[in-house]
Length: 322
Image 1: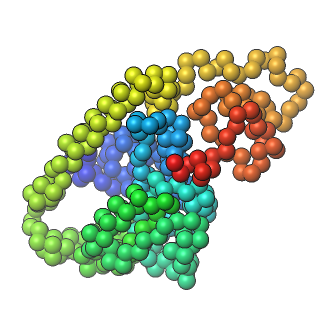
Image 2: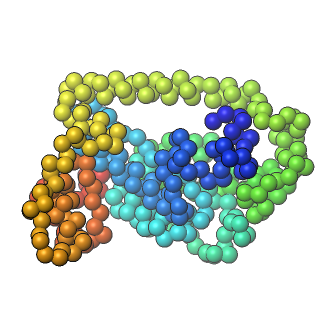
Image 3: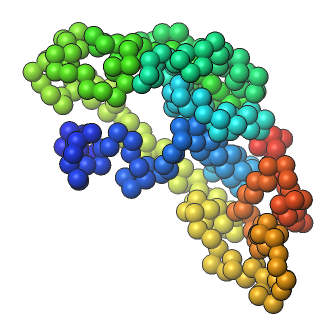
């Protein structure tokens, strides 16, 4: 992302890749969530996929998958039903590779969040669904507590919910109000913010050298981590060539070259009218039985949805929490 592109944020420039809500057309954005709670559901799905990959491919001495899924959300994300339904599944599956970072500033475009859900105890709700909960009361300034909470999430035996209570628009004259929720602050307020944090109000798009110094090791550290992981995968490939080939296909999101051979021939299908769910089962079951890269959800309606095949294994916490 270049400085020139950052300057185009919320602008009318047709070539801007900095809209308020980035879409999947932008490199680095993998999913477009649509409803707010769907972002939470995506995070649960990613954590589930990671656990499945780890249980399928990790071997003693060769840990090719062990990453965390970090999900940053706001008030409205947990007002959406789909988000809370996904949260319930994550708690049931004990997805301890998932951490939700909740920016709890209690402000929406309409005002304070209690205009929509007053008196709700989100911490108790998350605990009730099987989550580890960490509360940080001064999240707009207590960076150390946030860092320690993130580190502790890695060693939890449950998914972790970090409730970070913040002040929206911290440093602005409009701090703590809906006026800082996406609207321009105004030139005078920006000048005051810069002065209060020791910045030169006459400079624009300039960061102090101390900030560059603080982050200067990020790129080389990341490259080293990637190189170490690639070396592990390379050694794994020598020890388990068939598993490694399958693993690489799954990571790349590709199917085996001959996967279509598992689809029944036309003559094997019923000639009479057949319900859609049964037709789907006639195609999906052979694929699921013969290939390891299929995960099927049936909402407790496995027989009715015709998703029942030999060697079918339920995704449950005893397998997920390895």
